[in-house]
Length: 309
Image 1: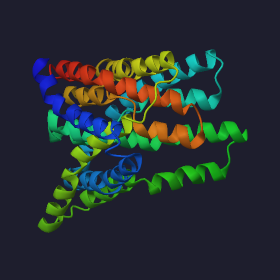
Image 2: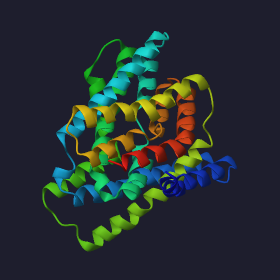
Image 3: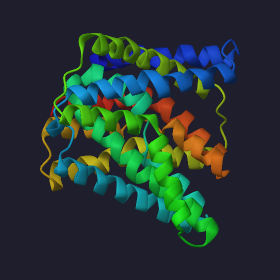
Image 4: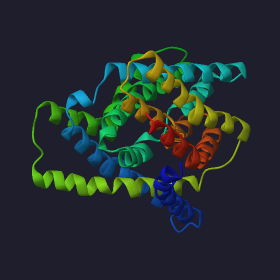
Protein backbone atom coordinates (compact mmCIF):
# COMPACT_ATOMS: atom_id res chain seq x y z
CA UNK A 1 0.00 0.00 0.00
CA UNK A 2 2.76 2.45 0.97
CA UNK A 3 4.68 1.69 -2.22
CA UNK A 4 1.63 2.38 -4.38
CA UNK A 5 0.80 5.52 -2.41
CA UNK A 6 4.32 6.84 -2.99
CA UNK A 7 3.92 6.15 -6.72
CA UNK A 8 0.60 8.01 -6.91
CA UNK A 9 1.82 10.86 -4.70
CA UNK A 10 3.71 12.75 -7.47
CA UNK A 11 0.52 12.88 -9.57
CA UNK A 12 -1.50 14.38 -6.74
CA UNK A 13 1.45 16.63 -5.82
CA UNK A 14 1.22 18.13 -9.32
CA UNK A 15 -2.46 18.78 -8.65
CA UNK A 16 -1.47 20.36 -5.34
CA UNK A 17 0.93 22.74 -7.08
CA UNK A 18 -1.86 23.74 -9.44
CA UNK A 19 -4.22 24.24 -6.51
CA UNK A 20 -1.77 26.56 -4.73
CA UNK A 21 -1.19 28.51 -7.94
CA UNK A 22 -4.93 28.93 -8.40
CA UNK A 23 -5.67 29.67 -4.77
CA UNK A 24 -3.06 32.44 -4.63
CA UNK A 25 -4.36 33.79 -7.96
CA UNK A 26 -0.84 33.44 -9.39
CA UNK A 27 -2.70 31.31 -11.94
CA UNK A 28 -6.03 33.14 -12.47
CA UNK A 29 -9.19 31.45 -13.82
CA UNK A 30 -8.51 32.64 -17.37
CA UNK A 31 -5.07 31.03 -17.32
CA UNK A 32 -6.59 27.77 -16.06
CA UNK A 33 -9.20 27.85 -18.83
CA UNK A 34 -6.55 28.29 -21.53
CA UNK A 35 -4.28 25.61 -20.07
CA UNK A 36 -7.27 23.26 -20.03
CA UNK A 37 -7.96 24.05 -23.67
CA UNK A 38 -4.34 23.33 -24.60
CA UNK A 39 -4.41 19.96 -22.84
CA UNK A 40 -7.88 19.06 -24.15
CA UNK A 41 -7.44 20.04 -27.80
CA UNK A 42 -3.72 19.43 -28.33
CA UNK A 43 -1.71 17.45 -25.76
CA UNK A 44 -4.32 14.88 -24.72
CA UNK A 45 -5.58 14.50 -28.29
CA UNK A 46 -2.02 13.81 -29.49
CA UNK A 47 -1.58 11.21 -26.74
CA UNK A 48 -4.88 9.49 -27.56
CA UNK A 49 -4.23 9.46 -31.31
CA UNK A 50 -0.77 7.98 -30.87
CA UNK A 51 -2.01 5.30 -28.48
CA UNK A 52 -4.93 4.35 -30.76
CA UNK A 53 -2.82 4.41 -33.93
CA UNK A 54 -0.13 2.13 -32.50
CA UNK A 55 -2.36 -0.41 -30.74
CA UNK A 56 -3.97 -3.36 -32.56
CA UNK A 57 -7.74 -2.90 -32.88
CA UNK A 58 -8.27 -6.20 -31.05
CA UNK A 59 -6.76 -4.59 -27.94
CA UNK A 60 -9.17 -1.66 -28.13
CA UNK A 61 -12.44 -3.58 -28.08
CA UNK A 62 -13.61 -6.48 -25.96
CA UNK A 63 -17.35 -7.17 -25.86
CA UNK A 64 -17.30 -8.82 -22.41
CA UNK A 65 -15.33 -5.87 -21.04
CA UNK A 66 -17.78 -3.36 -22.52
CA UNK A 67 -20.83 -5.30 -21.23
CA UNK A 68 -19.37 -5.47 -17.70
CA UNK A 69 -18.64 -1.76 -17.57
CA UNK A 70 -21.99 -0.80 -19.08
CA UNK A 71 -23.97 -3.02 -16.70
CA UNK A 72 -22.07 -1.98 -13.56
CA UNK A 73 -22.26 1.71 -14.44
CA UNK A 74 -25.94 1.47 -15.37
CA UNK A 75 -26.81 -0.12 -12.02
CA UNK A 76 -25.13 2.73 -10.11
CA UNK A 77 -26.63 5.32 -12.48
CA UNK A 78 -30.13 3.91 -11.87
CA UNK A 79 -29.64 3.67 -8.10
CA UNK A 80 -28.50 7.29 -7.78
CA UNK A 81 -31.32 8.44 -10.06
CA UNK A 82 -33.91 6.64 -7.92
CA UNK A 83 -32.48 8.12 -4.71
CA UNK A 84 -32.59 11.58 -6.28
CA UNK A 85 -36.20 11.14 -7.39
CA UNK A 86 -37.13 9.86 -3.91
CA UNK A 87 -35.77 13.17 -2.56
CA UNK A 88 -38.15 15.01 -4.87
CA UNK A 89 -35.57 16.20 -7.41
CA UNK A 90 -36.34 16.89 -11.05
CA UNK A 91 -35.26 14.63 -13.90
CA UNK A 92 -32.47 17.08 -14.79
CA UNK A 93 -31.10 17.15 -11.23
CA UNK A 94 -31.34 13.37 -10.95
CA UNK A 95 -29.44 13.02 -14.23
CA UNK A 96 -26.67 15.34 -13.04
CA UNK A 97 -26.28 13.46 -9.75
CA UNK A 98 -26.27 10.13 -11.60
CA UNK A 99 -23.59 11.50 -13.92
CA UNK A 100 -21.44 12.38 -10.90
CA UNK A 101 -21.68 8.79 -9.71
CA UNK A 102 -20.16 7.16 -12.81
CA UNK A 103 -18.15 9.71 -14.80
CA UNK A 104 -14.62 9.82 -13.45
CA UNK A 105 -11.69 11.97 -14.47
CA UNK A 106 -10.52 9.35 -16.96
CA UNK A 107 -9.21 11.75 -19.61
CA UNK A 108 -7.21 14.20 -17.51
CA UNK A 109 -6.22 11.90 -14.62
CA UNK A 110 -6.88 8.28 -15.58
CA UNK A 111 -4.96 7.99 -18.83
CA UNK A 112 -1.83 9.84 -17.64
CA UNK A 113 -1.69 8.19 -14.21
CA UNK A 114 -2.87 4.64 -14.87
CA UNK A 115 -0.75 4.30 -18.01
CA UNK A 116 2.31 4.98 -15.85
CA UNK A 117 1.26 2.96 -12.80
CA UNK A 118 -0.19 -0.06 -14.63
CA UNK A 119 1.83 0.07 -17.85
CA UNK A 120 0.91 0.75 -21.48
CA UNK A 121 -1.10 -2.48 -21.54
CA UNK A 122 -3.73 -0.52 -19.58
CA UNK A 123 -4.18 2.06 -22.36
CA UNK A 124 -6.52 -0.06 -24.49
CA UNK A 125 -9.03 -0.79 -21.69
CA UNK A 126 -8.89 2.85 -20.48
CA UNK A 127 -9.65 4.13 -23.98
CA UNK A 128 -12.61 1.76 -24.24
CA UNK A 129 -14.00 3.05 -20.94
CA UNK A 130 -13.48 6.63 -22.08
CA UNK A 131 -15.32 5.88 -25.34
CA UNK A 132 -18.30 4.43 -23.46
CA UNK A 133 -18.41 7.41 -21.10
CA UNK A 134 -18.27 9.91 -23.97
CA UNK A 135 -20.58 8.17 -26.43
CA UNK A 136 -23.15 6.56 -24.11
CA UNK A 137 -23.40 8.42 -20.82
CA UNK A 138 -22.39 11.91 -21.97
CA UNK A 139 -25.05 11.63 -24.68
CA UNK A 140 -27.61 10.24 -22.24
CA UNK A 141 -27.40 13.21 -19.86
CA UNK A 142 -27.92 15.71 -22.68
CA UNK A 143 -30.94 13.74 -23.89
CA UNK A 144 -32.44 13.50 -20.37
CA UNK A 145 -31.96 17.18 -19.49
CA UNK A 146 -33.07 18.55 -22.86
CA UNK A 147 -35.93 16.07 -23.20
CA UNK A 148 -37.25 16.80 -19.70
CA UNK A 149 -37.28 20.54 -20.42
CA UNK A 150 -38.91 20.24 -23.82
CA UNK A 151 -41.32 17.55 -22.68
CA UNK A 152 -40.46 15.37 -25.66
CA UNK A 153 -37.59 13.97 -27.68
CA UNK A 154 -36.86 15.68 -30.99
CA UNK A 155 -34.54 15.28 -33.94
CA UNK A 156 -32.91 18.56 -32.95
CA UNK A 157 -31.81 17.06 -29.61
CA UNK A 158 -30.30 14.01 -31.28
CA UNK A 159 -28.59 16.23 -33.84
CA UNK A 160 -27.14 18.32 -31.04
CA UNK A 161 -25.82 15.19 -29.31
CA UNK A 162 -24.20 13.93 -32.50
CA UNK A 163 -22.69 17.33 -33.23
CA UNK A 164 -21.28 17.50 -29.70
CA UNK A 165 -19.59 14.10 -30.12
CA UNK A 166 -18.03 15.08 -33.44
CA UNK A 167 -16.70 18.31 -31.93
CA UNK A 168 -15.13 16.49 -28.96
CA UNK A 169 -11.38 16.28 -29.69
CA UNK A 170 -10.97 13.11 -27.60
CA UNK A 171 -13.59 11.31 -29.71
CA UNK A 172 -12.12 12.49 -33.00
CA UNK A 173 -8.55 11.72 -31.91
CA UNK A 174 -9.45 8.16 -30.89
CA UNK A 175 -11.53 7.63 -34.06
CA UNK A 176 -8.70 8.89 -36.28
CA UNK A 177 -6.21 6.70 -34.42
CA UNK A 178 -8.43 3.64 -34.80
CA UNK A 179 -8.75 4.30 -38.53
CA UNK A 180 -4.96 4.55 -38.79
CA UNK A 181 -4.51 1.31 -36.86
CA UNK A 182 -7.17 -0.54 -38.87
CA UNK A 183 -5.53 0.54 -42.11
CA UNK A 184 -2.21 -0.84 -40.81
CA UNK A 185 -0.50 2.44 -41.64
CA UNK A 186 2.87 2.99 -39.96
CA UNK A 187 3.48 6.24 -38.13
CA UNK A 188 6.40 8.05 -39.77
CA UNK A 189 9.24 8.61 -37.29
CA UNK A 190 8.95 12.45 -37.30
CA UNK A 191 5.16 12.21 -36.76
CA UNK A 192 5.56 9.70 -33.94
CA UNK A 193 8.17 11.88 -32.25
CA UNK A 194 5.99 14.96 -32.67
CA UNK A 195 3.01 13.19 -31.10
CA UNK A 196 5.22 11.82 -28.30
CA UNK A 197 6.58 15.26 -27.41
CA UNK A 198 3.17 16.95 -27.56
CA UNK A 199 1.44 14.08 -25.76
CA UNK A 200 4.02 14.20 -22.96
CA UNK A 201 2.65 17.62 -22.02
CA UNK A 202 -0.74 16.05 -21.28
CA UNK A 203 0.20 14.55 -17.90
CA UNK A 204 1.71 17.59 -16.12
CA UNK A 205 -0.61 20.01 -17.92
CA UNK A 206 -3.77 18.07 -17.08
CA UNK A 207 -2.86 17.50 -13.44
CA UNK A 208 -1.86 21.14 -12.92
CA UNK A 209 -5.12 22.27 -14.58
CA UNK A 210 -7.19 19.96 -12.35
CA UNK A 211 -5.54 21.38 -9.24
CA UNK A 212 -5.94 24.99 -10.38
CA UNK A 213 -9.61 24.44 -11.18
CA UNK A 214 -10.20 22.93 -7.72
CA UNK A 215 -9.10 26.24 -6.20
CA UNK A 216 -12.32 27.81 -7.51
CA UNK A 217 -14.65 25.02 -6.43
CA UNK A 218 -17.08 25.74 -3.59
CA UNK A 219 -18.43 23.50 -0.82
CA UNK A 220 -22.21 23.60 -0.98
CA UNK A 221 -24.75 20.91 -0.05
CA UNK A 222 -21.94 18.96 1.61
CA UNK A 223 -24.10 16.00 2.66
CA UNK A 224 -25.22 15.42 -0.93
CA UNK A 225 -21.66 15.88 -2.18
CA UNK A 226 -20.42 13.26 0.29
CA UNK A 227 -23.11 10.84 -0.94
CA UNK A 228 -22.13 11.44 -4.58
CA UNK A 229 -18.43 11.05 -3.72
CA UNK A 230 -19.23 7.75 -1.99
CA UNK A 231 -21.11 6.46 -5.03
CA UNK A 232 -18.24 7.43 -7.33
CA UNK A 233 -15.30 6.24 -5.26
CA UNK A 234 -16.89 3.13 -3.69
CA UNK A 235 -20.12 1.99 -5.36
CA UNK A 236 -18.99 2.48 -8.95
CA UNK A 237 -15.75 0.46 -8.73
CA UNK A 238 -17.56 -2.14 -6.62
CA UNK A 239 -20.37 -2.54 -9.18
CA UNK A 240 -18.12 -2.81 -12.24
CA UNK A 241 -15.79 -5.11 -10.31
CA UNK A 242 -18.63 -7.52 -9.51
CA UNK A 243 -19.76 -7.47 -13.14
CA UNK A 244 -16.26 -7.94 -14.53
CA UNK A 245 -15.06 -10.64 -12.12
CA UNK A 246 -18.25 -12.55 -11.28
CA UNK A 247 -20.72 -12.07 -14.14
CA UNK A 248 -18.67 -11.56 -17.30
CA UNK A 249 -15.51 -13.35 -18.33
CA UNK A 250 -13.16 -10.36 -18.27
CA UNK A 251 -9.40 -10.90 -18.23
CA UNK A 252 -8.20 -10.18 -14.65
CA UNK A 253 -5.74 -7.48 -15.71
CA UNK A 254 -8.40 -5.68 -17.77
CA UNK A 255 -10.88 -6.06 -14.90
CA UNK A 256 -8.32 -4.43 -12.60
CA UNK A 257 -7.90 -1.50 -15.00
CA UNK A 258 -11.68 -1.11 -15.15
CA UNK A 259 -11.96 -1.05 -11.35
CA UNK A 260 -9.10 1.45 -11.03
CA UNK A 261 -10.63 3.75 -13.65
CA UNK A 262 -14.05 3.52 -11.97
CA UNK A 263 -12.43 4.55 -8.66
CA UNK A 264 -11.30 7.91 -10.08
CA UNK A 265 -12.91 11.10 -8.69
CA UNK A 266 -15.80 12.94 -10.34
CA UNK A 267 -14.80 14.46 -13.68
CA UNK A 268 -14.63 18.20 -14.23
CA UNK A 269 -16.73 17.99 -17.39
CA UNK A 270 -19.76 17.09 -15.25
CA UNK A 271 -19.45 20.55 -13.69
CA UNK A 272 -19.22 22.10 -17.17
CA UNK A 273 -22.50 20.40 -18.10
CA UNK A 274 -24.15 21.40 -14.82
CA UNK A 275 -23.08 25.00 -15.32
CA UNK A 276 -24.12 25.02 -18.98
CA UNK A 277 -27.63 23.77 -18.21
CA UNK A 278 -27.76 25.58 -14.83
CA UNK A 279 -28.55 22.35 -12.98
CA UNK A 280 -27.02 22.06 -9.47
CA UNK A 281 -23.53 23.38 -10.37
CA UNK A 282 -22.56 24.05 -6.73
CA UNK A 283 -23.52 20.51 -5.72
CA UNK A 284 -21.37 19.07 -8.51
CA UNK A 285 -18.51 21.44 -7.63
CA UNK A 286 -18.50 20.18 -4.04
CA UNK A 287 -18.62 16.55 -5.21
CA UNK A 288 -15.59 17.10 -7.45
CA UNK A 289 -13.64 18.74 -4.63
CA UNK A 290 -14.47 16.13 -1.97
CA UNK A 291 -14.02 13.09 -4.25
CA UNK A 292 -10.67 14.39 -5.52
CA UNK A 293 -9.34 14.97 -1.99
CA UNK A 294 -10.48 11.54 -0.78
CA UNK A 295 -9.11 9.86 -3.92
CA UNK A 296 -5.55 10.71 -2.85
CA UNK A 297 -5.86 7.75 -0.48
CA UNK A 298 -8.70 5.72 -2.01
CA UNK A 299 -7.08 5.37 -5.44
CA UNK A 300 -3.90 4.03 -3.82
CA UNK A 301 -5.97 1.49 -1.89
CA UNK A 302 -7.77 0.34 -5.04
CA UNK A 303 -4.59 0.04 -7.11
CA UNK A 304 -2.91 -1.89 -4.27
CA UNK A 305 -5.82 -4.33 -4.27
CA UNK A 306 -6.08 -4.80 -8.03
CA UNK A 307 -2.33 -5.45 -8.23
CA UNK A 308 -3.11 -8.77 -6.55
CA UNK A 309 -5.20 -9.69 -9.60
